[in-house]
Image 1 (cartoon, rainbow, N blue to C red):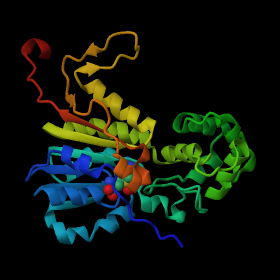
Image 2 (image 1 turned 180 degrees about the vertical axis):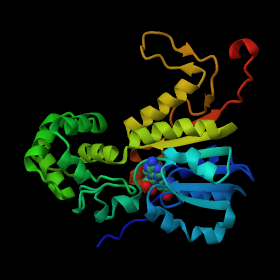
Image 3 (image 1 turned 120 degrees about the vertical axis):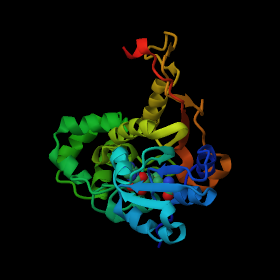
Length: 317
Ligand SMILES: C[S@@+](CC[C@H](N)C(=O)[O-])C[C@H]1O[C@@H](n2cnc3c(N)ncnc32)[C@H](O)[C@@H]1O
């Protein structure tokens, strides 16, 4: 029987190298997971690191690291959108860098009891932490239009209407297998070497259950306030919805604002807060792709906080 895999960190070297680690710096690993980034950061400099994860299991697994790193490592079970409150509680005012590695970890995905995977039958749960509602609550309690919209916008699923109607007729739905089979009745059964037809539906529900996109938007804004000048934000995304949020946030806060109308020239931001370091996202190398299938869709974006000019009197007035 296949054993639950340990998590192989994605774009690890590229992320750590671009954090510009400093001894005595304070860094945040906003998505601790199985501690891949955290360990590498702590091994590569004499810094302090705050590891945050909403999943109590991730925190429990990381506790033995406290023996090795002592007071340099602080572990927090919480949401990264609460980073300002978390740091305030720790009496930390500014940070030198922050990493995000979105999505689920391998132990979350491969534990059938967590209900993230259409490959393993289990309760349709999908909660990364301790939210109020599970994926089965979501599809059993919401109306067809709400489910359709979630599948369309969070899954970019073209057959959102048909799938949501099939879900409504089959309710109550309690297991991952039940849901996957409903999707197969609309999109066909899985084919060898092709993406599973239930992928988009499962992605959409996971995003909704964990409020993932709002979490990212709030955390990026909060991180920018907390960074010292030249401090960096690094974000690894796994699908276009995540990547679009990061890209937009970096552009809006950099000196080149993207224009929503692509026929107009970009407009300039008179008080940019960020410099974009990765003009194009950094992608995994061939070697990483061969070694870790999960890295297939990963994209790393990097931005650096600019020193803020003091406002002159006329600007402030
Ligand atoms: C892909 S894993 C991170 C893996 C990690 N970089 C490593 O090398 O082991 C993502 C982790 O982020 C956590 N997570 C996702 N959204 C979160 C949020 N809003 N706040 C805190 N943790 C979150 C998940 O529970 C999961 O453990």
